[in-house]
Image (cartoon, rainbow, N blue to C red; front, side):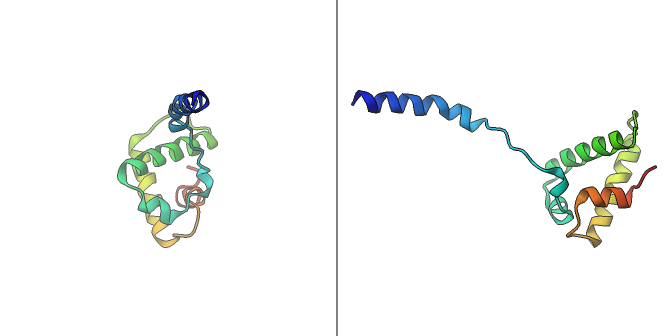
Length: 98
């Protein structure tokens, strides 16, 4: 009985640790059809991350919100015609190095 109580106490104590586990996502493997199917809030976060990554890759140190919105529209338009391609590839193709 005492062993069960100790086991139960241990199990209950680690539940919060398991519930807060991190999830790792390989952003390079997200394809256009998945991106276009994302809920708006998730799409906004994904787009912001991709924009930051792309800016870093191109040594941009500024934030242009109008350009950001235009780039999102360009990528989504490109993705409509290339649903099986990765979003990262679509970003490079539709936006390119400005």
